[in-house]
Image 1 (cartoon, rainbow, N blue to C red):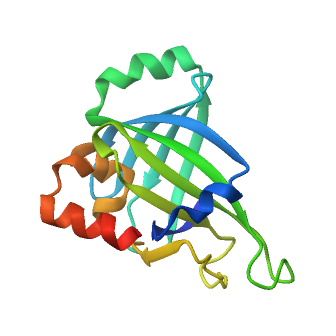
Image 2 (image 1 turned 90 degrees about the horizontal axis):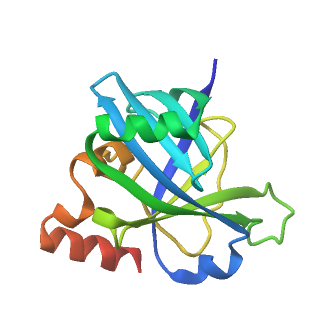
Length: 176
């Protein structure tokens, strides 16, 4: 059985951009979300698709089941979604830490949202266990793990563009 242990953060600066080693374009839609589970279809780089089920949880650890499906079938599922399609560019950003790699290197994922969520940047780090120590890069800002509005399923239903103007301004300024 597969579990995801992930922490989420806002971005403080664009310094991560020079460290990025890869990127992919992602479109995803939520077929169902409820207090227990979300069902998502995702298309990556227009040629790989998955169907995922994720448990809802207030902890860092969530059940995640993911299955490869044909891209054509994923495209057919997209119109069955609830809310908007979430569009983003995912950047892979390795970070070895201030000690130059003597610690444990982890690959961060920086999601740069577009479409209805344009202007939002979120850094995520997947961990091998909940108590795994993480050295935060200097470009990482406040932690938003557990804050529901920053999860993709919530962004599909209430995109960043619809957040109150004052709230949006505060969030974007906090990122910098």
